Length: 337
Image (cartoon, rainbow, N blue to C red; front, top):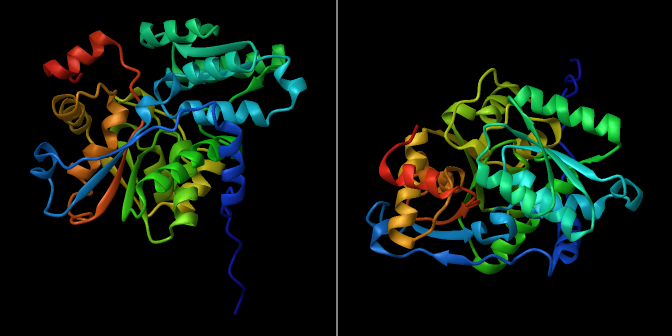
């Protein structure tokens, strides 16, 4: 019998717990230790099977308004000083651009970030408030071409929004922090855009607590990781169509894909309408003003994962809050276009 063919996509080397803890030490005092909330009010218990206990991780209270601060700062702290001296660059719909500008300012580095021309003016202004220079791009494809040109012509360090070990180490600190605060969790639900958040959190949680399920959630119109896992290799989407622009990555990449393939216990696709309903529930019940991506995990608990996690103690990640007042009013008013 012939030996089995080698896996064309071998598992990515996972960041170790030791490395994640070392990253957490470097980030200590620089990023916020965001709170958790054991949500026991009737507004949520009446919507779930008996005994299901959500434990929210309120990462929307992180510096810059999202989890992205962890990966961006971890990436800069891991970079050689001579690389930082030439400045940094990034490409983003908003949250990663904001986080990169913030991290660069913390370390006295100049940031030039490429953002979609359709990005929220409030997000663009936030980047500039942190000292970042903004280069507008008409579409996602052009945005990645522009950031490659900035790297080639100016020698700037690319701070990737979701790929690579420094990003996973940064987001991994969120996973370990969550377990430290919450104790035993039967499962955690993590939104997926490009996969850097899910990759780091899953690597941390599954190595520290192997019996805890780690479940991902994507918009139906931006399901690149689900398609990649089904295909067994990173895939590119022909079209991204979701209200959750923070989850609208056009493709998956090998490192984050490899960690997600190794550590995720499942993934669900959800409609935009489910995220809008979850945004409204967070505001009505808890007065949290989060963006659609920040409500994706709750939407999955109330929908796709509702029966699977019946009676479980479930970590629900509220990952971001960078939405402008006008956009938030539209969500609350029923306009989910």
